[in-house]
Figure: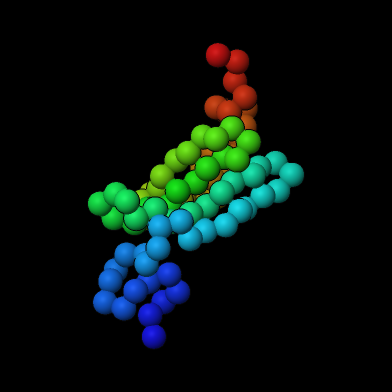
Length: 85
């Protein structure tokens, strides 16, 4: 039996757009699989601003292997998100 979201005999996702909403009191993000590029990637959309970012498998694996201290630095909103330009 194939994995959920995959067709038998194919490595990529079966349907573009499979995903959901991940939210908390601090963020509201739509998550979906995008298969329109050369390979499948994750489409992330900040639902408050409409900003979109695509992450491929290498970028996702990098987040998984990132040491906790580095991830904490990325999560600091004063570093990039709310800076005065």
